Length: 350
Image (cartoon, rainbow, N blue to C red; front, side, top):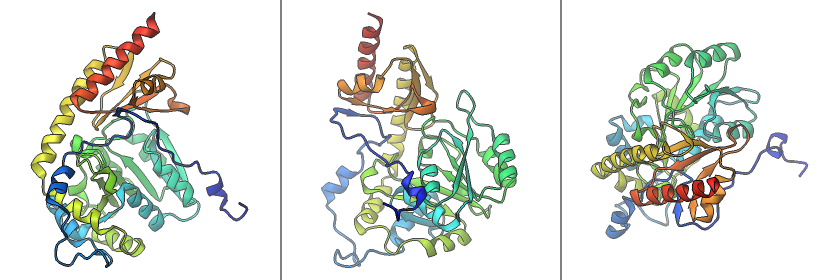
């Protein structure tokens, strides 16, 4: 279409894997640990919730529950439809045509995609060979190009690398750019920047209920920042951006702190099990701080071979050709994945 913006014409559609499977380990989804209890209780809205009326525009009760979960003032929180809406809100609020967005690469693809949609210029700072990152390199580049926004996915997706909290503080101390720390996987690691948001004028932290709370289908994420940034972004946020059902489920789920913490420990245990087993193959796994493991394999079409066994993992292309990411599943799922790998490598050797 001639009327479509040039930067949209060049945009690649985000496509998900729609093949049949018996074990799904390709999208870093969490375990369905909280929703069964919510289903048993039934969705009975509190007073003031009516399905024929618009939802609470400010998500007051949900923000209050998130505030308890993080030990932070609810006024410093904006919830929405997953972390993706939060990333887009940052772009809508701060990015003018031609503004620079900076991040390490490889990282979450939506940073560059939203940069393109909003006519920004995304610059990726290449990670080290082992996928660790060098903050000095990022600070030097930031001083050179003066980015409007810097994104740090921490722990990083897809590599699992964790940037030290002191390193992030050093970045904040050396730039006036908006620093967005995407902590979608932080429950599985340590070093959250949430308790630092009131100390910096340019810090935004993003979180989600998709991973550690296993609620990917309700699309619920949120941002935490100082009052000035929250007030500005609330001007940009769409009215009634979060439906009442997602608000309700989020409130109920966040009350189950003990179950959440127990699941996090389960994931860490299974992550170690999976990593240790991957080291037994001619595979290069990378230590992870998320609910997934990033690895390299020289087996051509490994993901397709696993797909034939009904197991889905994430494969990469381009500069990451030959690299894969597998979600940490249950013990049974992880065992089945390892079992299928054994068969594949056995066939490769024969």
